[in-house]
Length: 307
Image 1 (cartoon, rainbow, N blue to C red):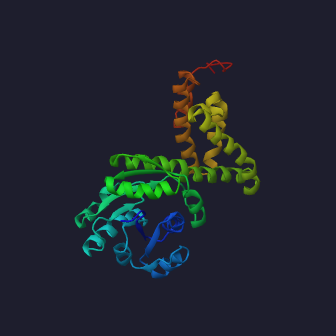
Image 2: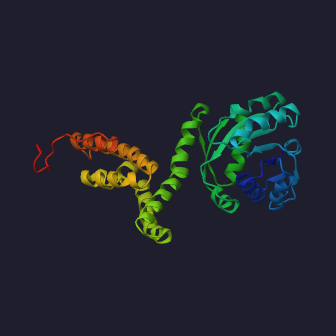
Image 3: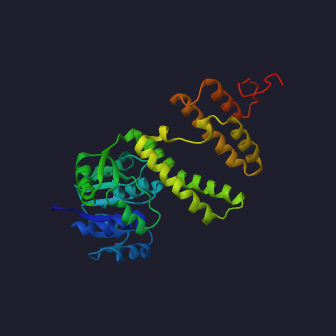
């Protein structure tokens, strides 16, 4: 193997294509782009310097010292088995998949051919190839597997100014859930927020212009003071009547939004109890409302607790 290994991209999607575009800028030679659909592989190969061959996955894999499996999670094991069945790997090659949820054990079969395995997941969002190219530089990669494959992949990550973080194979699903909540479900929450704004008679463009500065400051606060200290809003203040009014309105809007509100509200309530923002009495009353239980607890703000 030379100073930089030859690279094959198996799966010419957003991430695979982005890595293929970036790698030659740092001295790596992409020798093959393999895919089930040759036309898709060709389109990706046209974006990559060095004229890599657009071909089937077996041909691409056989040409490289670093084989990157950038296919969907459900296809990784199948592709690895196919490579083994056809002996389509050079001895000593490193085979690395980029799944966040799966460990390197899913491709362990390629060790039969004298190869090394690893998983390396970039903590970034990839909406299209252009954003993937921008996002890969400097991001964090969570990696586990054989030392040989990790060393080879680590060189490429270092070239991209990335940060390698070791992770246990049996903790990959927990790790991936962290990414899903932080990214995918954040987008879902933004859509819910915009949906509620629309129902208030505010168009989405105006709503986003108003919400985005608050969102940006919220994320900044999380970074500066931590998620728990950054929490604000009616639950942290113990605004019981506001929560009641929210719950009264939500059923007429959408059952799923109501369910989401209750689950997140319960988490926020327990968080505020643990941090000392709420006492047990108001926390219990809020949880009762959020769970749909009738509130029968007297409290100091009631002018007539017996009424």
